Amino acid sequence: MVQTVDEMKELEVGYSLLPEHWNKGFATEAAKKCMDYAFENNLSESLISIISLTNTPSMKVALKNGMKLEKETVYQQNKVNIFRIWKEE
Image (tube, rainbow, N blue to C red; front, side):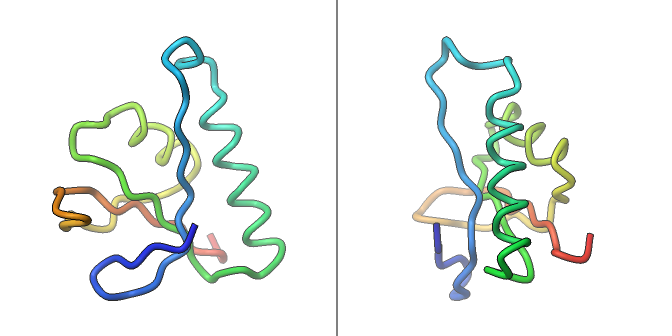
C-alpha cells in the first residue's frame, strides 16, 4: 500500500492477523513474499513498515525479514517506528 510518511510517498508492507493465527510464522512469510514481489517487479527501490512503538511482535517480523529500524516519527497522529529495507540488500 502506498503511504505518505513525513511528506514522502512510500510503499509499505503491512499485515494484520487474528490472534488465533499469531506466532505461527504467517506474518513473516506473507511479508517476505510481498517484499520479494515488490522488488522482483521493480515497484520500488525500498519498502517500509509502519509499526506502533508498542508492537513488539511486528518489529520482530520486520527484523526477521531484513528490515532495519530507520526512525521514529508521527504517522496519523501516532508515534511509530519506520522500518526499511532497500532492494539492493
